[in-house]
Image 1: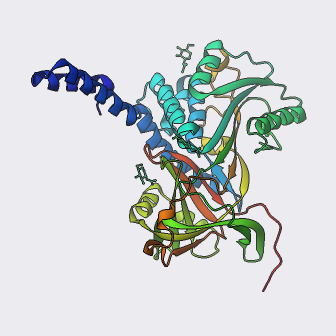
Image 2: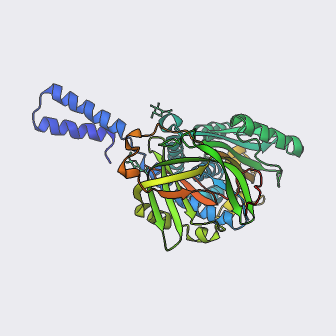
Image 3: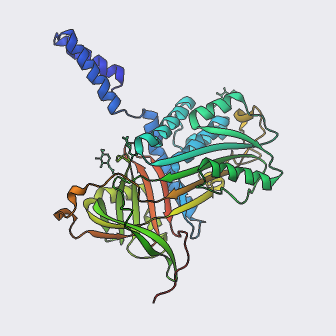
Length: 424
Ligand SMILES: *[C@@H]1O[C@H](CO)[C@@H](O)[C@H](O)[C@H]1NC(C)=O
Ligand SMILES: *[C@@H]1O[C@H](CO)[C@@H](O)[C@H](O)[C@H]1NC(C)=O
Ligand SMILES: *[C@@H]1O[C@H](CO)[C@@H](O)[C@H](O)[C@H]1NC(C)=O
């Protein structure tokens, strides 16, 4: 890929070779500048990290489903990668290098790791460009005794947008209150609580508090929202709101595996939400066993653009995970180990370990999006749509179109709502 300077050089060489007048040279230079700004590419480091964070998405998801029972899951792998970047920044020796191993970035220099992750995050979370609402607040909490090193405070803010706060962990109740209050405030009340408990209250804690609301490329009609049921299990259905629309979507029916895969573009198609749902209500274990990065790519490659009548829950879910143990399972064994952790770039002393990694998001599925293309209404194209009726547990991914980074991976198995009366 040419960078700006190279592109300009090529234009100049081409122009002078042809002995063009100076005005044409200038015009061409301007063209080259405009072209490269339009199609700004991520740096090679950011591209590599986007790709690797997609692998992290699947390994983390699989590690989490092992002990999640029937809970909702909501993780942002790119944000987890950022938090790992903070650990690398605060760590020394093998405490830091384990991060690079998890991110498959062993050969990357520190400054490229930090700059690459930072570039990736600002690209994928650019709300102005993407319309999609995504507020992300990050904090590192340390015990009252810690003295944060200036360089760490400055650099982790610069690259990872992490704030720092000291907290009296001995007073667990007020510590929890203060964390939850901060999360509620920074998400405008969308995420009222990060955690009810703090298992190890003696180390450094990383906390992400997020709110994500997709902006559909084609909005749902606000008038077409009604009350329906979402089947959690055969004997348990909750009442939810459902929104409906028929449009052209990339869709695949995997008859062998008895599932549907649907792609719903977001914003200006910079990202999309991919939904994988079994034909009928069933526990998601069977699909989760199939869920690899390759399999998802296969489903996507087999999708065809066709008329689909979508009924989607119009719901909000809030999910909070403590990722400390899961990250340890993926290889972050030192940072979480009080005896071994060397996080001395945080404080200048070997006095911290990573005691908790709270990763909390509120997700809101709403009708909001771009005005729909009315020109296809009533046309042949929308005849006999496939039905995609999302009234039972499903898996979803939010994938960045350009970099392939996974912005979210998760599952909805139990929306909030009142138990519905059996109508058998
Ligand atoms: C950690 O601190 C040392 C100096 O103590 C410094 O040379 C090194 O660059 C720091 N590492 C990071 C990732 O900031
Ligand atoms: C979406 O973002 C584009 C910029 O990419 C902007 O022009 C447009 O007004 C935004 N639309 C909405 C509904 O916010
Ligand atoms: C990715 O972006 C291109 C260009 O805007 C668009 O044509 C394509 O449909 C997008 N893909 C998805 C999956 O949204």
